[in-house]
Length: 73
Image (cartoon, rainbow, N blue to C red; front, side):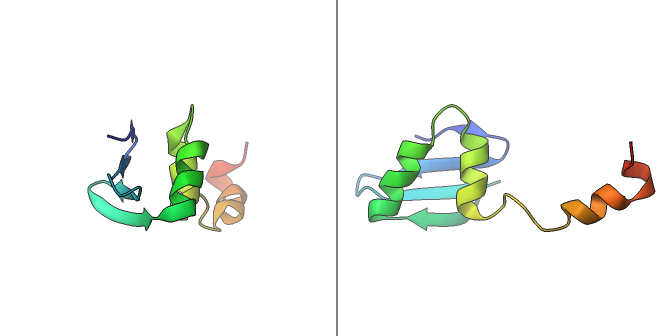
């Protein structure tokens, strides 16, 4: 069974594929070489790795949020 990390979870199946879920909904399925790469990359911090592999790493609005008056330091 995979690791639980802030809503992300991954499960390695017997056929070698990896199913990634986010809050119980399937976010992606990896097969073959990509599944092997993913399992090799998931190490100490599965949250960051899973977010990057599913495309939930950056949304593109980080620069805009930084410019808001309430976020200025």
